[in-house]
Image 1: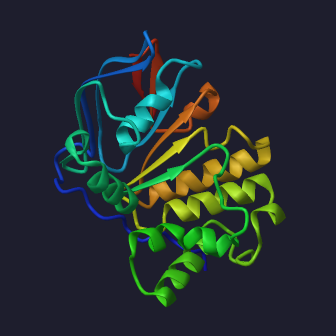
Image 2: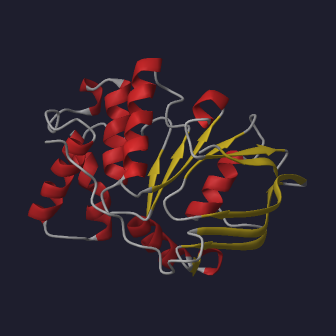
Length: 243
């Protein structure tokens, strides 16, 4: 029987967007130089959407993900996720919130090389101090089974293909039952077959109710989402519903 994702926690409001960016600007400064990465972004994403963010290098698409996850703070504007203003949180509260509410998948996997697939998959629960050790292991096995790696629990990252490592990274991102899954170029370091497997997995997670936002430079991959947002020069160039 194919494993299914348990329903993610509901947003605090069933009518409000899960993500709201209002007048968001981000300026990076290095010495006397400044670079405006975002120039007044207004954006709302509803619970259960699968949204691709596309644009050329330096357009600001990855900065949007960093703002939504609280990795970066806006220079101006407000950021609300799941009913909370994350741009006003303290660093300590923000880190705790992110660990429990947001799953992040990176282009280059970011797995710890000395830990097995299972140990990597339970790491967020260790950091968040959620569940008992036995329950963490059981949940890690379940999530690895969900991504098709139930037979690779004890493999180190070096013993896995790129596509398998990315699926471990997705299992890790699901560890704390996040309300939001955010992916930065999730297929950018994969061959076409592995990329298709990862995208099919994201499709399945979204059908099971997970809200997913992912960045890609590939417009073909962007079309796999239900909604695609194009960013250029720090502004939203287009926002299209695809299905």
